[in-house]
Each structure stands twice: as structure tokens, then as C-alpha cells.
Length: 411
Image (cartoon, rainbow, N blue to C red; front, side, top):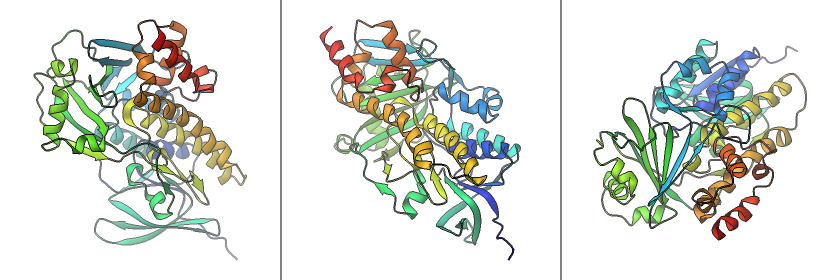
């Protein structure tokens, strides 16, 4: 009997950063890859401040040259403000070796560059495609796809990678979702012509600002080139819901309350619709199963405060390709150990830092007046995305952050 031949070796759902990177890495190994994307590019997305760790993955996928040629805003660190307090981390001064600089990117352009680069390398892409069903049997994955004209098609592959991000295609189809441990939060955000003239403002760093009266309310200001910026605020859903006005009025009111950021943006032009995203944190029961694995935000999304989303997406894609390559060659890799557990180690580091940010521990560390340079370099490494470097004591044992916060409070 003739053996069944799948249409593709791998189908990737979603053409965002993790999907395009995974497709490019698989294409390097001569696998037949198809990427299915529901929308058309370019399309708006937040998560615009990359971390230096991401640059290694772009190198790995032969995408770095295209990103560097795009002229995005240079980034070398992160700055934090609260009232009169101001601190910053230079990502070149970190514990872990590797890239110390990266870019602030408009995601509509960035994501399209990655997808176009992967396509130029030989990967097949189809846009306007919605995956409506997934089945796996007899060593073959089958997905049902509906295009924007309503035409339905069944495609087969040896394996499926879900890189659908907030769409979370397979978690919904396979009932994999579970409640997150984070409380529901709302983000209000937009792009502006910032018109910043304050010479103290460093455009090479993302600025994270804490509300002077509410420590769990924070803002981002991500500078782009040509005087534009992304600005947003994050607060618990109930806090935003209790405010009067529409999304833009609420965002403007909160910026007015922010302190230095309000001064920086005194002449800003709000020329883009304000978006709102609620209950974005999510989690799943498992990151892989028969015939599939979940990448990036399709698996677990934490919180945007430390810009970890793209880095986690890239790391998940790189890990998954290594494991999948062995499976497609007839080996029997341990997806739980070699993919899920390995990925989760860094995710848990970021998660502890996110929780410590909201409960005040990390803010106490960041804003302490007496900094220990070696410890600051360790914290800087994690903020730069090196959350998998277990040589770093604050990665190896994230609970060390408790003792550090207590020490900072006593100074």
C-alpha cells in the first residue's frame, strides 16, 4: 500500500514573529512549510519594544540584516520613573554575554519584514486564511481552512505549529485554555507624534512610568524614529472601568496624572485611534500534544511591562524547531522536557518579575538609592531578555528577588 503523503511537512498558523521565525528555521532544514495567516499584512500590533536577546534569534533565522536595514529606532536600555525618581538600565552593562542593543519597532512594519524575509527564503505564505478545525490521526495532522471568500479547504501536514498569538487557534479548538493567575487588566494605547523637546529624555530607551499614587498602574513610552512614539497605560480592569469618558479621554486623563511623562507629552499630537485591550493575560494546560505545539502568545501571555512577548515568541520557535526536527527525522523527543519545561524556565523568570513589579518588590529594587553594581547587572540581564541564563543567580532562583527587595527597603 502506498504511504500517505501529507501536503506539507509543517503548517504554521500565524505569520507573526514566532510563526515567521519558526518557518524560516524549518526552511533552512529543507522542510516543506506553509504559513496560514488570518489577516493581511501590514497590520497593527503592540509589543513594540524588543529585547536584545531577540537579536540572536534574528541572526539564527538570517533575518537580522533585513531588520537592521529598516531604520528602526535604536534601543540600548530601559528607564523607569515615578514622581521625582528616575532610574535606568543600560543593557550593555549586564551579567550575561550577548547582544546589549536592539530596536523599538512599529510592529506593522516589523512583522511584515519578518514574513517577507521568510517568504523570500522559500517559505509559502497564504493570507486571509482562518483555521476552523484540527484533527490528528495516523501520524497526520489535518486542518480545515476557510478563506475570506468563504471557500473551505482541508490541508494536511506531519505537524502543526500554532503561532496565532492572541487568536489562540488551537487552545480554543482543543479546549486547552485555563485561567491565568494574573488579575484582569486593561491596556489603553495609541501612536502619537510626541513632539518631545526635553533634553533629559533618552530616545534610546523605553520609558516605564509608575503612577504617583497607584503603584500598580503604569505607563509605557516607546520612542520610534521621526518623532513618533507608542504610548499606553496598564491598570486593573475595574480601575479603568470606573473612569469617565471614552478610551482616548481615559488615556489622556491618566497621562495628565503621570508626572514627568505628562510634561514630556505636553505638546503631543494624538493622531491615531486609541485602542483598548482587556483580559490579555492567558495560560494553557499544555504546550504540545499529538501533532502540534504552541508558540509565543498562543501558549502563555504574561504582561507587557517588561516587553518579553517577542523574546518568548522567538525562544519558543527556536526550541520547537530543534525538537520538531528530531521528530520529523523519526526520533522520539520528549516535548515536555525539551520544549515545554525548557521554555517555561525563562517564562517563570519573567513571571516572577511581573508579579514583583505589581506587588512593589521590583519597584523597590529599581528605585533604591543604593545599588550594588554586580546585582544591577544581573537584573539588567533579565530585563534585556536573558531569562534562560541559569548562571544568573536571579534566574537560577527567582525567589532571591524577595531578599533583595527586603534589603532595598531597609536602605
